[in-house]
Amino acid sequence: MKKLIFTSGVAAILACTSGQASLVIGPDGDATFHGANGVNAPVPIVSAPLLLSPSGNVLSVKTSDDGFGTPTPDATASQYAYIHFSLPGLGSPVASATLNLTYYLPTSPSSSGMVTLLGIAEGAAGDIAAPWVESASTGFYSGSDIVNGNANLKNLGSFSFGSTPANKVPFSITSSLLAQFLNSDVNGGVTFILFRNVDNNNFGFNAHEAGVLGTPSMSIDFAAPEPTTYGLVGGGFCLAMYGGLQLFRRRQTALIPA
Image (cartoon, rainbow, N blue to C red; front, side):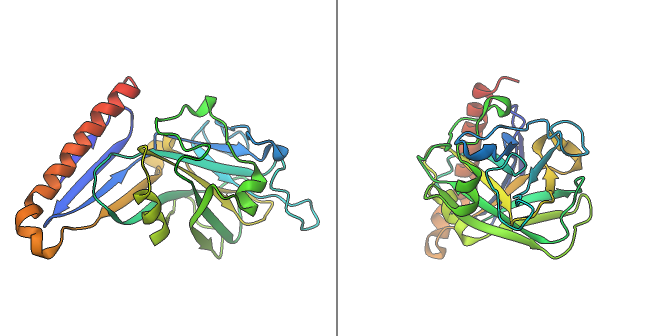
């Protein structure tokens, strides 16, 4: 196993076994955004002031209603979490992928519901290649776009919970659609948006600033070489991927000075 620590703060672990490879990476930015009352540039809540947590350590998702059961996704009280990952160009198909998160018990916890993962389509507004600065970013999409659907936002899976999770419990979202989404990436960066079903309570999870408390990560498994060609390319498969990660490491160091 080869462990690489990027000076940008993004960590990756590359494991190679019998010509197969898997990768675990962390995000280079994440933030919670208000619904912003329908404006197509939601306001970031980088410090997450509505949660009982250290500043910036928690992401929150909530789709409010008007008190009578009608969803109000564009209301300021509605919140959406954005997570951005820079991807190394490894040139190998993704076989499966999982977004890993850690639950944080907010001030008004949800008793049950569902959290949905969206991906911003390649080349659409908000599909940013380089790491973005949280405090200077905009949400690109209104709450209505996120909750009710937008052609640029791809549904990649969901996580359902039947009761309020315990604090610091890990959970994950995985699907074949997530793997397909990563395979469609061209510019080396993917942006995810998370939202929850209509409910006036928060569903919180740790941001990448949370450190040892548990941070977001993405696990990626790559397709192995064909059995008939393993003898020729299997041994070089991991070496090629390791070289790609080294290039990615240098690129990240150049983009974000230590």
